[in-house]
Length: 405
Image (cartoon, rainbow, N blue to C red; front, side, top):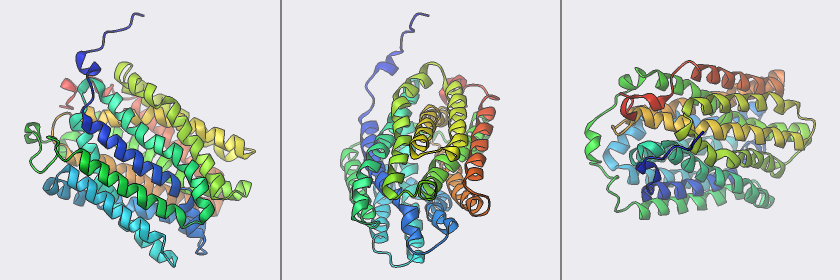
């Protein structure tokens, strides 16, 4: 089949705001990749159960969830750049304080405060990325944004294996430093951008309400899809995988970091091709394939006979994630288009966070009652359901004018 000619907008240089946000995302992910494997085990050091250790992850996601409307309100008054930077600074201060926590309740509260800041910069960054993404390169921008986070996630656990050797408090100090760097990068790089600020752009006068978004079938499926994705990738993977490594292989935080790094490596292999394929082949095939591949990996993971097989299963799960995640972000951009869609963006983040809240809690409870296998199999079932749902709707690239109208 002859190669199609790319439209001029697809070949054009991406706006510099994209690169600034990617750099900030990389710095955040680098620090989070260091601290993530240590969070459940740090909580267990206070003598709590698997359920309570998993709840530390859920507390962060829960506060993101309930603070989403507040983030939208702040965004409308402070603008994207200030909201983004203020949010990161909140996470930085709460994370630094976690290193000084003397008991489990303090750690739980501090992680919750971090969630408020996290949703502020997440919603601001997502809204800005949608504005600056060329219509014919939405998949490319989504994959580039994801790649920044994933590169940080890949390198982070490698640093984490070293940082953790200084104790379970050290990763929180490292994360604090990377968050400060991210805040400075975005503040300085975007200070003269015409896309940020209180007034916004001319297109901001066109508003996409949540009711409008819910009328689009692809957006309704997207909400269920990001819920399943949040449950597995942002919840169960971070909270239950390290506990499984500790229980099944007597592994420490460093070993758990290597298993999580395998997931990030699987992401890294396919994240850039996935962006191209989303813009050429379409969102739907990538979403169905990615969800199904990840589901199979989560079925196989608890049956891994050794740490090598467990890492391999996580590598496959990461590859599936790379196929699906840029597609989800591209679908959101297709639905919102150039309209002001803060409510739709917040809804997208809220469903992802809802999965991140419920996933670790229920999976942790299932582990305590029925073992690790069931926790991962339930997660796989959600991913399979998302794949089936995507097969029932048309590709979002076919939405009129790519605006979701």
